Length: 143
Image (tube, rainbow, N blue to C red):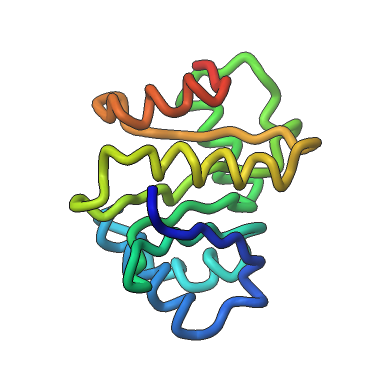
């Protein structure tokens, strides 16, 4: 990793940073909804990783999901834990393909989680996303 990572509260991001973050969310997560801009603004923390040359190479976030979404996620996962105990979601993790394999994703996740050490955080991923499952396990997440 020869770039730099930055964590920012959404309110402190420039309009350009928010647009670039949104662009990568849409690139990485097909079907992102029309409310994405407001959900980005409502997140707790946004993480940006800039490769050499000031190119945005990766993003991640600690999101503050609404209660209905959180309850639905826990219900679909058949989770035993109470969703009300989890206020934050680790998500929107996307690394531009040319920058993958450099542990950028795990580093961004660790930075975000270190910013909220007292918070209980949940994460979701597709069952076929082996790389993300590996990262989440390395971070101590369990199914």
